[in-house]
Length: 209
Image (cartoon, rainbow, N blue to C red):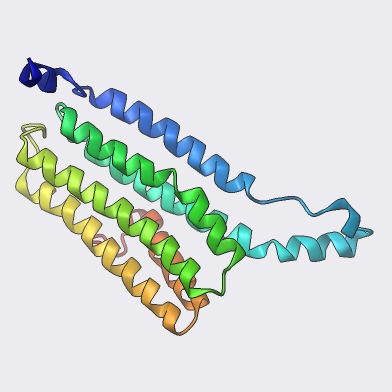
């Protein structure tokens, strides 16, 4: 009975995709909601308002970075799901674990926005990205081993998807290591990596990444 149940449970790729869309939508919404309007008591004129908005710069920066992070991982997960002919219980739980880490993105984003000069905050933000990549890679490898991929998915495609995740994680690790010099160096490098993954396919730059 248990074997039969395991074959039936979590077999819908569409349900995984639907849950993913909902979790990502909530996560990116929570990120922007963490940007608080300036207190009315400290704003007496236009210059006070502009100065208060300037102080929100780190939060706006982290919003843009984290929105790109969420978008990159959403596209990555959807790309994997599109290569599946079906799912199973274990694969479903791998994707649920991935989405649990997506739900942490608003927390790690706000933490770094508030303590943007502290290395510990930068490392925690980076670790969030590391765990997201690890869950995604684990789900892809499992799908291949379990025979869940569509018949037309070639070995070259399998390697390309895996390589993309691993190269991205290596670049993120390099960016995080730059916090030894300055957290701003790390943030700048990570933002550049994100821009590459978001824009490069259209520009024809670094396609192999």
